[in-house]
Length: 264
Figure 1: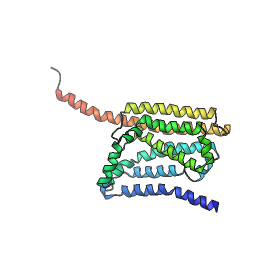
Figure 2: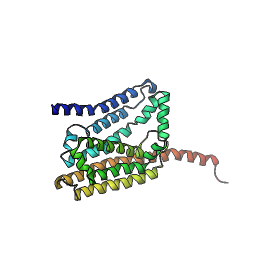
Figure 3: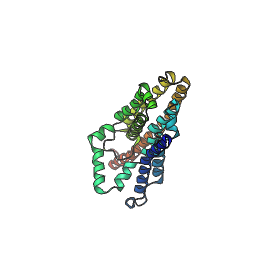
Figure 4: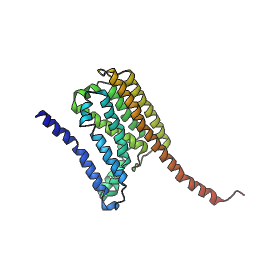
């Protein structure tokens, strides 16, 4: 009976992901955008939701209560891989293009609000993201995740939300009235990568209480190298955006220069 109840509970955890995917695909097929929504964005959203859901329920989530390496894998998937897929799917843009006028205006007002400005600042998002990882692995919270399914869900929810905020703040293409300049975002990204790598190396050298040395070493390596792959993707995306922004500005400058003619 307990196993049956546990199965139903885990199945219920996948329901929000299914609802989100259904809503996204329904919006992507809306006549308001006349089938112009790129299929690659829909694929990214589906992949992102599947990746995120796998860290809340299923074999990986269950193993994460016993094995440190599995817990780190869930952290990388929920906090880095899933957010990257979700940000690339541009859900806010899709919502603004398909919602009715009143809901769209409310969403736009929310994006312009002071709380949104604070949360989407790259520095704040980075503190919530990598700071949360340090708290998770360097305090008693990690043991609490192993002992309590509820704490595990709450922590993974924070990891997913903070990872999304950070990824969107660094490389997001959705409308963001308060998006800072590329140089600031690049600086925050470099500092965040350094903090993440230091955490990975510290876990390798000094395992959390109760974690076997072998698991700590494997988990630290996984965090460092798998996380590094996602961080490299962020670097490429950010520099590509920076390059495109500069490329759009150059022709305008050339036109203004040529229109003045040669100096007398």
